[in-house]
Length: 379
Image 1 (cartoon, rainbow, N blue to C red):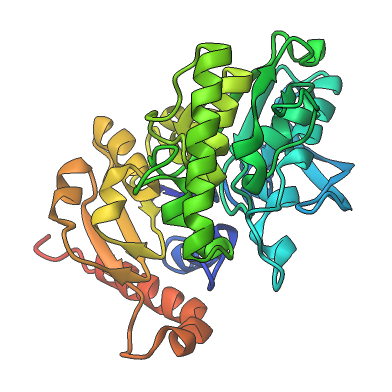
Image 2: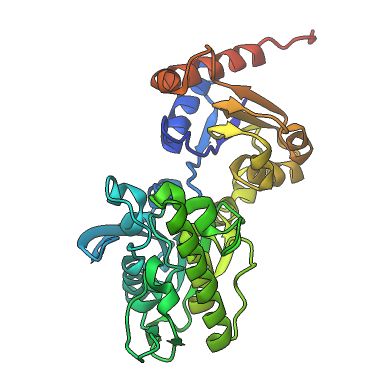
């Protein structure tokens, strides 16, 4: 092998995508020391997205003081790549780890995300890639919008910054005061889900429980999102509720559509476009990709499938190395994946298996490469 491209998602709770790239890369070098290794660590919009982009294409970190999930002062950062493109992950100021032990999506805000968007625009960024993932919020992006100058009023004509529990109180939305510095700035929101804004498959019912919501809160949050959708439609003339991805990050996907005219795209597609993947894989002998578990959900366009579809157009074989293999994956082979290997070498519960995931990954790749050197059937 002369050229190998490595582009995995993280194995959540075990290894980052960069660690996976490093392990696969050095194992390939054992058997093919002259091989050109091209590593592209991937994050689909959640925690680690900025670092992955900076590792893949270079750039710099910019630190900024913003509001955290409970309006407290925190320090966060975003990345600048290609001089005028900012990469922001909402998890850096509105992520679940920031509220560990005090989760409450009725009260958390995305206000800090809006502050980061403004800071990036003031830094001359004309394109913003916004990662929607790992949030602790359910405010429909209203907090971020408020930071950008959008005004929300209750039925007493009092201005306020909505949170999940007060979306029901929004009587009027005024976007005339949105910061002029955002004119000409395009926002692409990365999400790896296609959930709609509200309802049984919406943001509250599907994701709010993992953010600390009980059954009663879920219903209240869902009703709040439904009300927000109605006001957006009435005051702004924008229909967002049924757009795939609108439910991402506590329905921040819907908010970015309504208040910033953002484009919602699957995270892997944004990554592949940004790193110029189609050009990057030219002349590659094989592509290694992977994710923590591959199953029927993977067919909806996550990392492995996104990579495979692009590679198939150029006839480049794709090997998926994963933690676990679920059911209903036969269709993935038609999408460009040539083979799938699990690193689960022993039958152990996850909490035990995760402790040996790095060595198991290396052993799996080692076995695969040993086989590749056999040249079976050749003279």
